[in-house]
Length: 326
Ligand code: XMP
Image 1 (cartoon, rainbow, N blue to C red):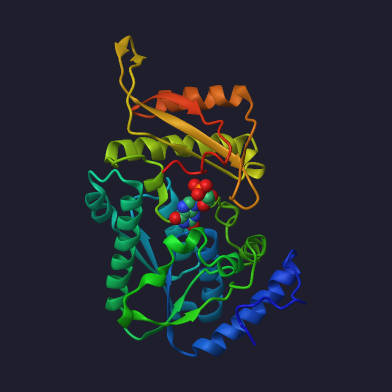
Image 2 (tube, rainbow, N blue to C red; image 1 turned 90 degrees about the vertical axis):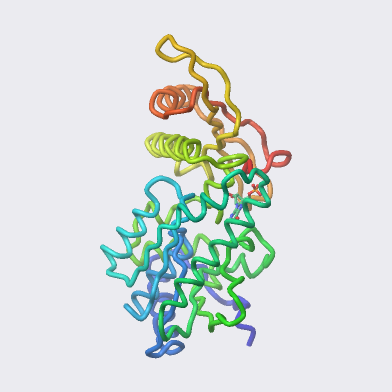
Protein backbone atom coordinates (compact mmCIF):
# COMPACT_ATOMS: atom_id res chain seq x y z
CA UNK A 1 0.00 0.00 0.00
CA UNK A 2 1.27 3.47 -0.86
CA UNK A 3 1.28 5.20 2.53
CA UNK A 4 1.58 8.56 0.80
CA UNK A 5 -1.77 8.19 -0.93
CA UNK A 6 -4.96 9.27 0.73
CA UNK A 7 -7.44 6.35 0.58
CA UNK A 8 -10.41 7.12 -1.68
CA UNK A 9 -12.85 6.30 1.12
CA UNK A 10 -11.22 8.51 3.76
CA UNK A 11 -13.82 10.94 5.13
CA UNK A 12 -13.07 14.64 5.15
CA UNK A 13 -12.50 15.60 8.80
CA UNK A 14 -15.01 18.38 9.43
CA UNK A 15 -16.28 17.72 12.95
CA UNK A 16 -14.83 17.29 16.42
CA UNK A 17 -16.06 13.67 16.43
CA UNK A 18 -14.17 12.85 13.25
CA UNK A 19 -11.14 14.74 14.56
CA UNK A 20 -11.20 12.79 17.82
CA UNK A 21 -11.42 9.50 15.95
CA UNK A 22 -8.45 10.55 13.82
CA UNK A 23 -6.50 11.60 16.92
CA UNK A 24 -7.15 8.25 18.67
CA UNK A 25 -6.04 6.38 15.58
CA UNK A 26 -2.86 8.42 15.20
CA UNK A 27 -2.00 8.28 18.90
CA UNK A 28 -2.08 4.48 18.66
CA UNK A 29 -0.10 4.46 15.39
CA UNK A 30 2.58 6.79 16.74
CA UNK A 31 2.98 4.76 19.94
CA UNK A 32 3.31 1.63 17.83
CA UNK A 33 5.90 3.23 15.52
CA UNK A 34 7.99 4.95 18.19
CA UNK A 35 7.82 2.59 21.17
CA UNK A 36 9.93 4.07 23.98
CA UNK A 37 12.26 6.01 21.66
CA UNK A 38 12.61 9.76 21.35
CA UNK A 39 11.25 11.98 18.59
CA UNK A 40 12.58 15.36 17.50
CA UNK A 41 10.39 18.08 16.01
CA UNK A 42 11.24 21.51 14.60
CA UNK A 43 8.38 23.54 16.02
CA UNK A 44 7.94 26.79 14.13
CA UNK A 45 4.62 27.70 15.71
CA UNK A 46 2.86 27.39 12.36
CA UNK A 47 -0.36 25.41 12.12
CA UNK A 48 1.10 22.16 10.85
CA UNK A 49 4.05 21.78 13.21
CA UNK A 50 1.93 22.94 16.16
CA UNK A 51 -0.76 20.35 15.48
CA UNK A 52 1.85 17.62 15.10
CA UNK A 53 3.44 18.71 18.38
CA UNK A 54 0.12 18.64 20.26
CA UNK A 55 -0.73 15.24 18.78
CA UNK A 56 2.64 13.77 19.69
CA UNK A 57 2.55 15.23 23.20
CA UNK A 58 -0.74 13.39 23.63
CA UNK A 59 0.75 10.18 22.24
CA UNK A 60 4.22 10.08 23.78
CA UNK A 61 4.52 13.04 26.17
CA UNK A 62 8.12 13.86 27.03
CA UNK A 63 9.54 11.43 24.50
CA UNK A 64 8.90 14.27 22.08
CA UNK A 65 11.59 16.94 22.02
CA UNK A 66 10.41 20.15 20.34
CA UNK A 67 13.02 22.59 19.13
CA UNK A 68 11.86 26.13 18.45
CA UNK A 69 14.43 28.22 16.61
CA UNK A 70 13.71 31.93 16.80
CA UNK A 71 15.51 33.29 13.76
CA UNK A 72 14.67 36.85 14.74
CA UNK A 73 12.28 37.09 11.80
CA UNK A 74 9.14 35.97 13.61
CA UNK A 75 6.10 38.19 13.88
CA UNK A 76 5.48 40.00 17.13
CA UNK A 77 4.58 37.65 19.96
CA UNK A 78 4.99 34.41 18.02
CA UNK A 79 7.92 32.83 19.82
CA UNK A 80 6.38 33.90 23.11
CA UNK A 81 3.17 32.08 22.15
CA UNK A 82 5.07 28.90 21.32
CA UNK A 83 6.66 28.95 24.78
CA UNK A 84 3.38 29.79 26.49
CA UNK A 85 1.33 27.09 24.77
CA UNK A 86 3.82 24.26 24.56
CA UNK A 87 6.02 24.75 27.60
CA UNK A 88 3.64 26.36 30.07
CA UNK A 89 0.27 24.89 29.09
CA UNK A 90 1.10 21.52 27.53
CA UNK A 91 4.22 20.89 29.63
CA UNK A 92 6.18 19.85 26.56
CA UNK A 93 9.84 19.09 26.37
CA UNK A 94 10.73 22.31 24.54
CA UNK A 95 14.16 23.57 23.61
CA UNK A 96 13.97 27.28 22.79
CA UNK A 97 16.85 28.81 20.90
CA UNK A 98 17.08 32.52 20.34
CA UNK A 99 19.33 32.63 17.30
CA UNK A 100 18.39 36.19 16.33
CA UNK A 101 21.95 37.52 16.37
CA UNK A 102 23.31 34.64 14.30
CA UNK A 103 20.74 35.19 11.57
CA UNK A 104 20.82 38.98 11.53
CA UNK A 105 24.63 39.08 11.55
CA UNK A 106 24.75 36.75 8.55
CA UNK A 107 22.07 38.75 6.73
CA UNK A 108 23.81 42.07 7.28
CA UNK A 109 24.28 43.91 3.96
CA UNK A 110 22.69 41.09 1.93
CA UNK A 111 20.07 42.61 -0.36
CA UNK A 112 19.44 39.86 -2.92
CA UNK A 113 16.18 38.02 -2.08
CA UNK A 114 17.39 34.59 -3.18
CA UNK A 115 20.62 34.96 -1.21
CA UNK A 116 18.62 36.01 1.84
CA UNK A 117 16.41 32.92 1.52
CA UNK A 118 19.45 30.66 1.15
CA UNK A 119 21.16 32.14 4.18
CA UNK A 120 18.04 31.82 6.34
CA UNK A 121 17.29 28.25 5.19
CA UNK A 122 20.91 27.14 5.53
CA UNK A 123 21.39 28.69 8.95
CA UNK A 124 18.12 27.20 10.16
CA UNK A 125 19.36 23.72 9.33
CA UNK A 126 22.70 24.45 10.98
CA UNK A 127 21.13 25.64 14.23
CA UNK A 128 18.68 22.75 14.26
CA UNK A 129 21.44 20.24 13.50
CA UNK A 130 23.64 21.62 16.30
CA UNK A 131 20.80 21.25 18.78
CA UNK A 132 19.91 17.77 17.55
CA UNK A 133 23.50 16.63 18.07
CA UNK A 134 23.38 17.71 21.70
CA UNK A 135 20.46 15.40 22.34
CA UNK A 136 20.92 11.72 22.91
CA UNK A 137 19.01 8.71 21.67
CA UNK A 138 16.85 10.44 19.11
CA UNK A 139 15.66 7.96 16.52
CA UNK A 140 12.79 9.76 14.87
CA UNK A 141 12.11 13.10 13.26
CA UNK A 142 8.53 14.37 13.24
CA UNK A 143 7.40 16.67 10.45
CA UNK A 144 4.26 18.66 9.79
CA UNK A 145 3.98 17.42 6.23
CA UNK A 146 0.40 17.76 4.97
CA UNK A 147 -1.28 16.25 1.91
CA UNK A 148 -0.82 19.25 -0.40
CA UNK A 149 2.95 19.06 0.32
CA UNK A 150 2.90 15.49 -1.01
CA UNK A 151 0.75 16.42 -4.00
CA UNK A 152 3.01 19.32 -4.96
CA UNK A 153 6.32 18.14 -3.64
CA UNK A 154 8.08 21.15 -5.12
CA UNK A 155 5.50 23.47 -3.59
CA UNK A 156 6.05 26.56 -1.51
CA UNK A 157 7.20 24.61 1.50
CA UNK A 158 10.16 23.12 -0.28
CA UNK A 159 12.32 26.00 0.91
CA UNK A 160 11.97 25.51 4.59
CA UNK A 161 11.34 21.87 5.28
CA UNK A 162 14.00 20.19 7.32
CA UNK A 163 14.69 17.84 4.40
CA UNK A 164 18.19 19.25 4.13
CA UNK A 165 19.71 17.76 7.27
CA UNK A 166 23.24 16.37 6.81
CA UNK A 167 23.67 12.75 5.64
CA UNK A 168 24.67 11.46 9.09
CA UNK A 169 21.60 13.03 10.66
CA UNK A 170 18.92 11.02 8.91
CA UNK A 171 16.05 9.80 11.06
CA UNK A 172 12.97 7.73 10.49
CA UNK A 173 10.09 10.13 9.85
CA UNK A 174 6.92 10.52 11.90
CA UNK A 175 4.33 12.39 9.84
CA UNK A 176 0.93 11.94 11.48
CA UNK A 177 -0.97 14.55 9.44
CA UNK A 178 0.52 13.81 6.05
CA UNK A 179 -2.80 12.66 4.55
CA UNK A 180 -4.76 15.69 5.77
CA UNK A 181 -5.76 18.84 3.97
CA UNK A 182 -5.16 22.15 5.70
CA UNK A 183 -8.77 22.63 6.84
CA UNK A 184 -8.67 19.17 8.43
CA UNK A 185 -5.41 19.97 10.23
CA UNK A 186 -7.15 22.99 11.75
CA UNK A 187 -10.14 20.90 12.91
CA UNK A 188 -7.75 18.40 14.50
CA UNK A 189 -5.80 21.25 16.14
CA UNK A 190 -8.97 22.63 17.65
CA UNK A 191 -9.96 19.19 18.95
CA UNK A 192 -6.52 18.96 20.55
CA UNK A 193 -7.24 22.19 22.41
CA UNK A 194 -4.78 24.50 20.65
CA UNK A 195 -5.73 28.20 20.81
CA UNK A 196 -7.72 29.67 17.90
CA UNK A 197 -4.98 32.19 17.18
CA UNK A 198 -2.61 29.30 16.50
CA UNK A 199 -5.02 27.04 14.62
CA UNK A 200 -6.30 29.87 12.42
CA UNK A 201 -2.92 31.29 11.68
CA UNK A 202 -2.28 32.66 8.23
CA UNK A 203 0.33 31.10 6.02
CA UNK A 204 3.72 32.52 6.97
CA UNK A 205 6.87 31.98 4.92
CA UNK A 206 9.71 29.97 6.47
CA UNK A 207 12.08 32.96 6.04
CA UNK A 208 9.50 34.98 7.95
CA UNK A 209 9.73 38.75 8.00
CA UNK A 210 12.98 38.36 6.07
CA UNK A 211 10.97 38.37 2.82
CA UNK A 212 9.01 41.46 3.92
CA UNK A 213 11.92 43.60 5.13
CA UNK A 214 13.04 44.31 1.58
CA UNK A 215 16.65 44.67 0.59
CA UNK A 216 19.37 44.38 3.23
CA UNK A 217 17.73 43.86 6.64
CA UNK A 218 18.57 46.29 9.41
CA UNK A 219 17.39 45.84 12.98
CA UNK A 220 15.64 49.19 13.13
CA UNK A 221 13.66 48.63 9.93
CA UNK A 222 12.87 45.04 10.90
CA UNK A 223 11.58 46.29 14.20
CA UNK A 224 9.42 48.93 12.50
CA UNK A 225 8.01 46.24 10.21
CA UNK A 226 7.21 43.96 13.14
CA UNK A 227 5.42 46.69 15.06
CA UNK A 228 3.46 47.92 12.03
CA UNK A 229 2.46 44.34 11.19
CA UNK A 230 1.21 43.82 14.75
CA UNK A 231 -0.98 46.93 14.46
CA UNK A 232 -2.38 45.78 11.12
CA UNK A 233 -3.21 42.37 12.57
CA UNK A 234 -4.82 43.85 15.65
CA UNK A 235 -7.02 46.18 13.58
CA UNK A 236 -8.00 43.43 11.14
CA UNK A 237 -8.89 41.18 14.08
CA UNK A 238 -11.00 43.91 15.67
CA UNK A 239 -12.84 44.52 12.40
CA UNK A 240 -13.47 40.79 11.91
CA UNK A 241 -11.41 40.76 8.70
CA UNK A 242 -9.28 37.94 10.06
CA UNK A 243 -12.25 35.70 9.23
CA UNK A 244 -12.60 36.83 5.62
CA UNK A 245 -9.16 37.87 4.37
CA UNK A 246 -6.83 35.00 3.54
CA UNK A 247 -3.51 36.69 4.18
CA UNK A 248 -2.54 40.20 5.27
CA UNK A 249 0.73 41.73 6.29
CA UNK A 250 3.09 44.68 6.02
CA UNK A 251 6.16 44.96 3.83
CA UNK A 252 8.73 47.70 4.35
CA UNK A 253 11.04 48.62 1.46
CA UNK A 254 14.49 50.05 1.89
CA UNK A 255 13.42 53.51 0.76
CA UNK A 256 13.01 56.69 2.72
CA UNK A 257 10.94 59.72 1.91
CA UNK A 258 10.54 63.08 3.51
CA UNK A 259 7.77 63.69 5.96
CA UNK A 260 7.00 66.06 8.76
CA UNK A 261 6.42 65.25 12.42
CA UNK A 262 6.07 67.69 15.31
CA UNK A 263 6.78 70.49 12.81
CA UNK A 264 10.13 68.94 11.96
CA UNK A 265 11.39 67.11 8.90
CA UNK A 266 10.90 63.37 9.49
CA UNK A 267 12.44 60.94 7.05
CA UNK A 268 10.96 57.51 7.24
CA UNK A 269 10.11 54.29 5.43
CA UNK A 270 6.72 53.52 3.95
CA UNK A 271 4.71 50.60 5.37
CA UNK A 272 2.96 48.75 2.56
CA UNK A 273 -0.26 46.90 3.39
CA UNK A 274 -0.92 43.69 1.47
CA UNK A 275 -4.30 41.98 1.98
CA UNK A 276 -5.25 39.22 -0.45
CA UNK A 277 -7.80 36.53 -1.01
CA UNK A 278 -7.03 33.26 -2.73
CA UNK A 279 -7.79 29.59 -2.53
CA UNK A 280 -4.46 28.12 -3.57
CA UNK A 281 -1.99 31.08 -3.47
CA UNK A 282 -1.38 30.55 -7.20
CA UNK A 283 -3.48 33.60 -7.99
CA UNK A 284 -4.91 36.19 -5.64
CA UNK A 285 -7.38 39.05 -5.62
CA UNK A 286 -7.39 42.22 -3.58
CA UNK A 287 -9.67 42.55 -0.62
CA UNK A 288 -11.83 45.69 -0.45
CA UNK A 289 -10.88 47.23 2.86
CA UNK A 290 -13.16 50.01 4.16
CA UNK A 291 -11.44 53.38 3.80
CA UNK A 292 -12.28 54.22 7.38
CA UNK A 293 -10.26 51.27 8.59
CA UNK A 294 -7.37 52.12 6.26
CA UNK A 295 -7.29 55.63 7.70
CA UNK A 296 -7.30 54.27 11.23
CA UNK A 297 -4.46 51.85 10.51
CA UNK A 298 -2.50 54.63 8.81
CA UNK A 299 -2.97 56.96 11.76
CA UNK A 300 -1.91 54.31 14.25
CA UNK A 301 1.13 53.07 12.35
CA UNK A 302 2.49 56.56 11.62
CA UNK A 303 1.91 57.67 15.22
CA UNK A 304 3.09 54.52 17.00
CA UNK A 305 5.89 53.09 14.90
CA UNK A 306 9.29 54.71 15.00
CA UNK A 307 10.70 55.16 11.51
CA UNK A 308 7.51 54.87 9.45
CA UNK A 309 6.14 58.04 7.91
CA UNK A 310 3.75 56.77 5.22
CA UNK A 311 1.30 53.90 4.77
CA UNK A 312 0.45 52.56 1.31
CA UNK A 313 -2.12 50.01 0.16
CA UNK A 314 -1.02 47.56 -2.53
CA UNK A 315 -3.84 47.05 -5.06
CA UNK A 316 -1.96 44.60 -7.27
CA UNK A 317 -3.53 41.19 -7.87
CA UNK A 318 -1.49 38.02 -8.46
CA UNK A 319 -0.55 37.82 -11.23
CA UNK A 320 1.15 40.19 -11.81
CA UNK A 321 2.34 40.79 -8.26
CA UNK A 322 3.33 37.80 -6.17
CA UNK A 323 1.74 37.77 -2.72
CA UNK A 324 5.04 38.44 -0.95
CA UNK A 325 7.17 41.39 -1.96
CA UNK A 326 10.56 39.74 -1.39
P1 XMP B 1 4.03 34.26 -3.48
O1 XMP B 1 4.79 35.41 -2.92
O2 XMP B 1 4.91 33.31 -4.24
O3 XMP B 1 3.51 33.45 -2.21
O4 XMP B 1 2.82 34.67 -4.28
C1 XMP B 1 2.53 32.44 -2.28
C2 XMP B 1 2.25 31.98 -0.87
O5 XMP B 1 3.36 31.25 -0.34
C3 XMP B 1 3.79 31.82 0.88
N1 XMP B 1 5.25 31.64 0.94
C4 XMP B 1 5.85 30.68 1.64
N2 XMP B 1 5.34 29.70 2.42
N3 XMP B 1 7.54 28.98 2.89
C5 XMP B 1 6.20 28.86 3.05
O6 XMP B 1 5.74 27.97 3.76
C6 XMP B 1 8.12 29.93 2.13
O7 XMP B 1 9.34 30.02 2.01
C7 XMP B 1 7.23 30.82 1.46
N4 XMP B 1 7.41 31.88 0.63
C8 XMP B 1 6.18 32.36 0.32
C9 XMP B 1 3.36 33.26 0.81
O8 XMP B 1 3.25 33.84 2.11
C10 XMP B 1 2.04 33.13 0.11
O9 XMP B 1 1.02 32.72 1.02
